Image 1 (cartoon, one colour):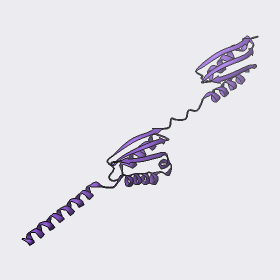
Image 2 (image 1 turned 45 degrees about the vertical axis):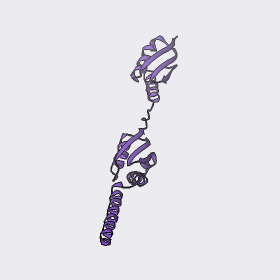
Image 3 (image 1 turned 180 degrees about the vertical axis):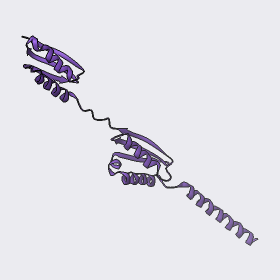
Image 4 (image 1 turned 90 degrees about the horizontal axis):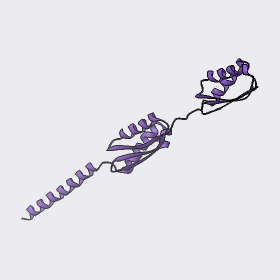
Amino acid sequence: MQDRKSLQLITAAIGVCLAALLGACQKGPDDAALTTSVKSQLAAQSPALASMVNVETKDGVVTLTGTVDNDSAKSQAEQAAKGVANVKSVVSNLNVKPPIVVSEDPKIKSAVEAGLAKYNVKGVTANVSDGQVTLTGEIPRAKLQDAMKAANEANPKKVVNQLTIK
């Protein structure tokens, strides 16, 4: 009887140990370890990218936040996170910086001034704002057409004539 009780007790102990071991195997790495792994993967690909991306993990779901330079960098960060073992899914809240728009105004102004010189038009000032050329000054009637031609050859959005005819 005592042997039977001992056997039942040992069997129960083995069952408890197996259940605990099975539970530990299914749990996987903790969120902090996943966050560290994703950050390491980002840093290995691009230290600059790693500095722009914040990583948080909850229940195996990695969330990326921050602002990156372009769509390629965003995709690179997302793929790096997805490539880490035991990551269930990736939520990307990354923003892409808008492209820097370079004003064409100085280029247009230079072209208008070059055209005015080419047509020997004097006494005219060209101001350019948002692609629109405004001509001011005094000009002989004979040179008006040349001034307008010089302005239009620069391909502005619009030409505003505020010239005074002498």
